[in-house]
Length: 470
Image (cartoon, rainbow, N blue to C red; front, side):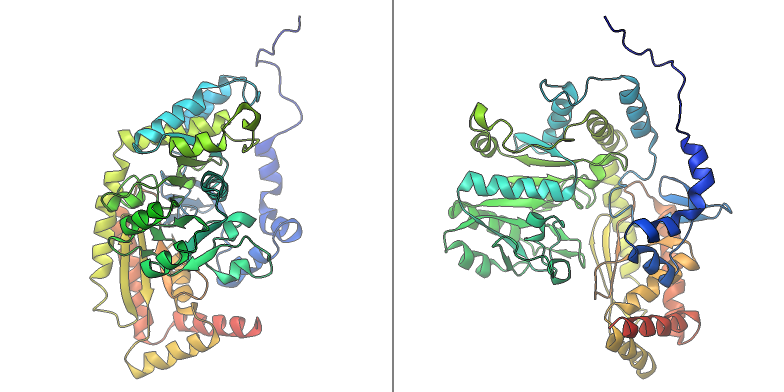
């Protein structure tokens, strides 16, 4: 009989630390040569080609020891910040356990335990499918909705983002992502909050469901008050399903565990989560749904693998998810997101009357949109017009760059051709980070309204770049 390995055998052949020490400085050249060549080009152009050496919580550090505040959280993946000790320990523990993982023909405990814990936060839902990403969670919901209802079409909102694989791209409301990838599935967009359009499409009788972000990531736009509940009633009247995409908004981001919980009586038939559930380590996505939907899809033993994922429910992802939910509960992360988010939003909103280029501050919890718009004064208006003529969205980029270059704060423009900055920091930030961001943002706004300086010089560089790309 072959004895199992003891785990004490000497390791051979691979030295990660040595490899990074030897080749780490080549990072941008390696990407340009072997990966998406436009990424390093873009980063060099806007001055985002930093070299970060380490990270913890809501901060990065460069080789000189300078700290950078992360207000982006890896597009929401780092909900608990980077390298949370509880999640790190869980992953060390699951690796050290040497579990018989992904045998394909057994039932391991960790997926059931994570499903149980997720469903405890979703009392009207009954079952979970685990995949590997947000787009995969949406793909699952689309398939389940179509099969469970026997109808082919799914409705979605203009400007929505639900992923970039073919099914989720079919319900992506941004033309820039869809262009060149047709034919897609025969799904139909309606305006965010347009109940009349929803009812008109439902009357055609072929709608399986309606997938919606309670707060759209692109532009940070909330569904209007009462819309989700009214949509749910219309959908059920027409034997269609409500699908809530909580990939970015879920797990506390908006000050409740799910963003749809802001509206009383809303109980989606399917809910998609991912991003923060990973702890920032192991990709994981989950589609939660009602019992009858799952039982219709998996209606017999012959259909036991009709929808599956090769790496779904792997032990490392499940351990990370369990640790994340434990931290969310033990450290009152949802309450912190609500309290800190309100502090940040209110302090930024107080600046709207002070700066004519600042038009709106909106959002919930730690998902905040800062929108810029046309100023009134002639001098600023002429410069604004110059930027808009070259490419809409350049002023927001002009704000993002000095936030990083001068104040060491990482943020993002909320979408292509939008004058909106989106803040989605780790849910663990507090008043210190709020103070730092507001002080930096105020300084950038002072510079912009001062009418000169490096900020507008950089704006002219962006204009040349935008015109050159036409």
